[in-house]
Length: 75
Image 1 (cartoon, rainbow, N blue to C red):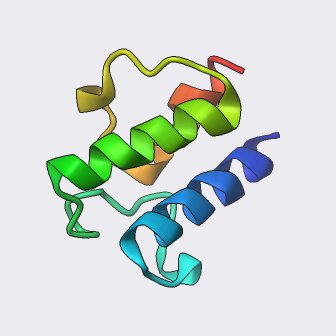
Image 2 (cartoon, helix red, strand yellow; image 1 turned 135 degrees about the horizontal axis):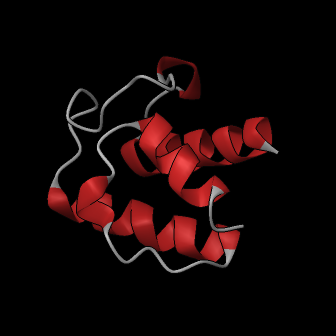
């Protein structure tokens, strides 16, 4: 399940930012990817739709791993 979540999150981030998914690792921070607030908002909305969850505290998600753990705890 964890791998599936990671792969989907990578897909969403890669698509949103127009970057190769292979560049996105668990330890990658959104700051390192150059994510601005609008990008993050759109990524969060896509993740909410993809996993059918509500992300209430998006500001606590700083890395891809944070996002994976957040989603994993709610699906």
